[in-house]
Image (cartoon, rainbow, N blue to C red):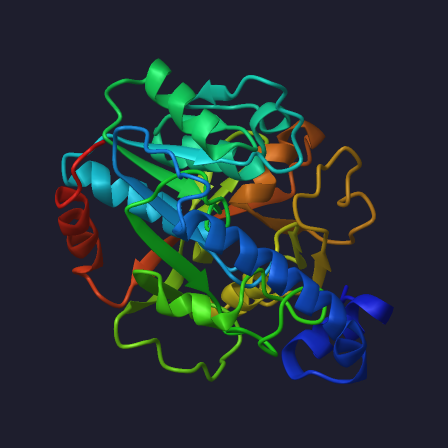
Length: 345
């Protein structure tokens, strides 16, 4: 299934520009003015960002939608733990009505209460997670419940300036900055010039090939690939290497993520012959099964989907687990060095 109609046209305009993008440009100019005013207020000290007492690493993106932040955050949390840190994660908890007080948990979290990405991060890293639209509130609740946390990773918090940060990392993919315009005429939350003020750019190269402009000289740049670790069956947790799954099966792939095509591309690059693909909306809740009508012997889903659809009890469904691999093996050493230079307020 592919995006059709207005959505597909808008996505093409976001990449290449055109009449629709031009028609929406006045709204983008208004959005740009709002973004600039907000940043100016913080720079001038009219509004103060709050420090929470431990270093904060913000991982975000300019391009709206999925670029690969979640696997990077998982890799960062694991790498920091290997280096002796005790990381925690704060997130918006997209699609969840959190309420006044933040929710804090670790281990096997209910995605209906925490959101699919925070639930996946908690399961893969064992790091404590807090969710709330206000990242400062989430960070303070996390530290109150887990005072041993010594570094916070903020998931998708680049535009949430109220939480002071010590390192800013942008994760992008082969789409880069698209047509370079802000929403709705383009795909960007902030102008391309924002890339000059961050600390690092991680480029997810797991999708279709793309030609991207060079990173600013002041910004550390690294490429990321998503490597398949294997698959596990949702019904009983059985794990197998991907090449140990039945070879003569009719295979379908289903993904409810920001960029489903990247998941399908990763599978094909791994040698999987896909007979059908189903691209669902990002954060699809799986209250209704998308599997029943599929004529397939084997259905592959992402780990992010898996945290929400185990209740469907379909023996054909296997989740594919991926891990981030960086082109620069010293990247997380650099990150740790940056954290050591931080003096808590």
